[in-house]
Image (cartoon, rainbow, N blue to C red; front, side):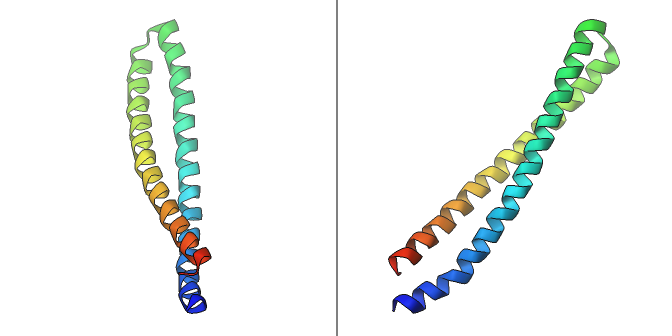
Length: 99
């Protein structure tokens, strides 16, 4: 029956949508962190070029490692987000078809 199968999907669809919103917020934060680290890296690159400062080189290398770690976590989270988005979209399609 369309109404029974459709109504049983609604709570799961809503939960999926809420989860997607949470994941979007996390992705935005991670993206912002990555952008901030990239900006800091660029500033330090200029310092390295001007001063050849060993401390700046060390800090630069540390920030590159942090940036790469954040980027790696972002890619993992984004992959999970894409999977969740596909799952929710599939449920919405099923709901719209009456399954």
